[in-house]
Length: 123
Image (cartoon, rainbow, N blue to C red):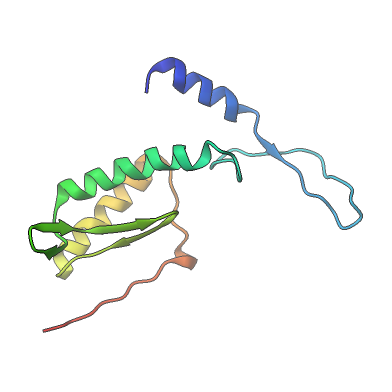
C-alpha cells in the first residue's frame, strides 16, 4: 500500500471508540479502541484479508501439507477461521512456528479458548 493510503487508514482508526447501550437505553461514555478492527465496518474484512493473505503466503512458501494430485495445500480458511493441514508432526510444528512468529510480528492474538488441535493417523 502506498503511504497516503496507510495514513488514511490510520486516521480512520485513530479515534475509534465504542459505546455500550444499557438496558434502560442510556449510552455509556465513549470507550476507546486500541486494537483490532471495527465490528461491522465495511473495511474490516478487507483489512483482515491483507493480514491473513500475508500469513498464508508465508505458510505456502514453507511448504508441507496435504497432496491431492499435483495440488499441495497446508491451510484452509473461511472468514476468520483457519485450519493448518500436514501429513506429519514435523511439518505441523514448522507451520505452527510460522504462525506464532507472524502473530508476534503483526500483533495478532490467537484466541486459545477457540482453538482446537486434532490429529489423525490413517496408516
